[in-house]
Structure formats: structure tokens, C-alpha cells
Amino acid sequence: MKILALEKELKKVRTSDFKKYANEEAKVLWKLYIEGTVREFYFRKNENLAVLILEAKSKQAAEKTLMQLPFVSRKLIEFEIIPLKSYPGFARLFVHN
Image (tube, rainbow, N blue to C red; front, side):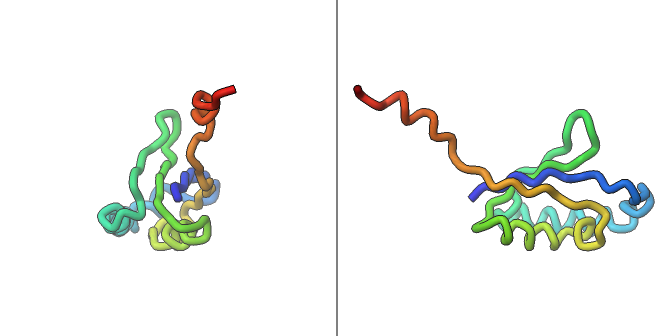
């Protein structure tokens, strides 16, 4: 299943906290991308917050994957996790009355 993960801002974190773990974060994210778990990653255009698209069996599996990220495991960031489903609206175009 596809999972949308939206970074939520944590007020108590300083920019210098991120610098300590930035290289490790990039390496882990790259590993997850190569494995096919994290399919896409972006930043919002209007805010410096990450948006990830994951492939996971469940919301709990996505949470476990995200905990591998140093920024998450060290509580520098957290994510809102939103399971997605396919858009069902096209089916009505093919219903014959």
C-alpha cells in the first residue's frame, strides 16, 4: 500500500541539532529508496518540511520504516502517516444503466 508521510514541525528543535545527523539521515534515506520502501521524497515548496511516499504493508510498517531515519529516531522530526487507496471514481464512467 502507498503511504503519504508528512513531516510535522517540532518547535523545540534547533537547526544545529540536524547538522549532527544530516549525513547519516541522507545515507539511511538512500538505503530505503534503493530497497523500494521509500519511493519518493520531496520538500514542500512553501515550508522546509519533508514529504515522503512509502510502499508498506500497513501504517505500522511505515512507522517502523520511518523510525530507521536518524532524525525520527532522535525525535528531531515526526511524521503524520496517511495510508492511501486508489481513486475509485473512474468506475462510475463504465457503469451502464
